[in-house]
Length: 78
Image (cartoon, rainbow, N blue to C red; front, top):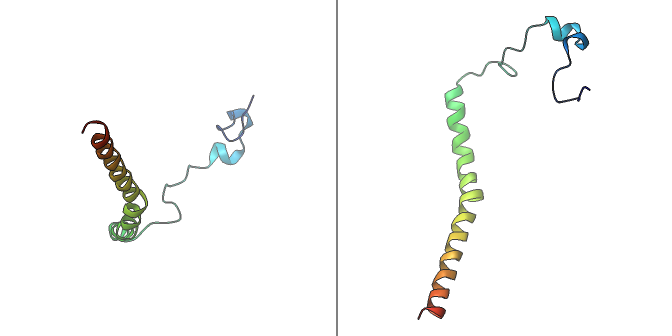
């Protein structure tokens, strides 16, 4: 039984294009000029957002945990 979207159909059921046309070149929409500079620019834009979105909440959780541990220590171990 074929499961659509999971794998290619068997060779008997493939269309002519699936059997005879070469696979894509892997270039996406076209070649990219200055790829290294483009990646550096993207990092400069997205890294601050990443730091705020993911690392800041982790830092807040770590500080809250430290406060809880210190409070526990002062209440039960003092």
